[in-house]
Length: 325
View 1 (cartoon, rainbow, N blue to C red):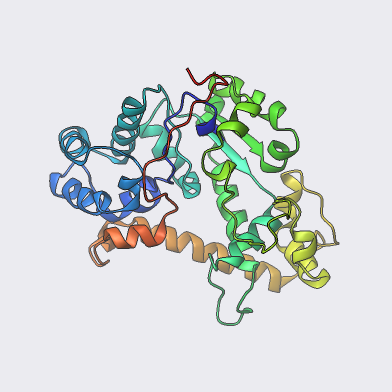
View 2: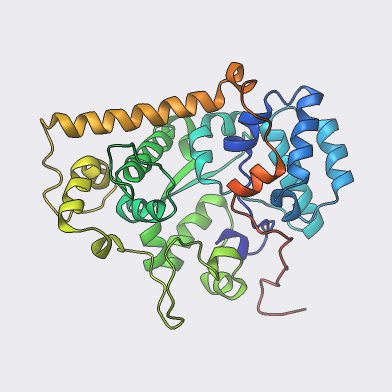
């Protein structure tokens, strides 16, 4: 939504700098690492969506970049300059796992944590097989997706004391139900008025084309991403799901629809939670371990394109005000 409000660089891509590029290319204070990063990035959708000049951005990255924060800042500030706007925003969901590093490298960063009902998130992630189930789980299980949602949300919220007044939480459902009221709160936090009517009129990216894993063949169907879990889960599945992540749902203000909060003393549930959390933490460690990086294959532009959400071309800029001149 921010990109449609005016004053922000329009980059219709999740940059994936901290969660994908940085772990794969290592120490960017080393010129060879920067060169490898640029080779892959310039051949990917992440570059093509920027609309930047390859020679200019290459020159600046090789000259000024020493860490992931530098790379993101250089790219986004170059887009700002090319579009004549003062601000930029980054929206890669897994950046939530790197907030201490983000704040260290980009001290003036403001964090808006959008929190969504984990039951809807799990169904969406399950549609695209985002979290592979263990062999003994159902092939299309959403259990791992729900536990991943819980793990990443809790990890992000654990950084609140570090971030202090530079962190705010917004519920996705509140943003849809009371858009202007919620935007006023975000606007006060970032120091910029946000007008819902302007955002709806400009409608970049997911504002006009929602990024959803649920497709409908009915062109007249009303898009509503809230509360899909009420039809997506069977009663038995819902109860089991809420027994696993019910505490976190309630902590975040979501009411349970079953007796799922009655899970104390169930060793099987505790084992399931522990196994998935340990798997996510181990995978995160492996992904960011500098010693193991050398054993992984070189990240290519085609690998980036297969992973990221990004337009394959620069955005067509639109006038945010009601006047075209």
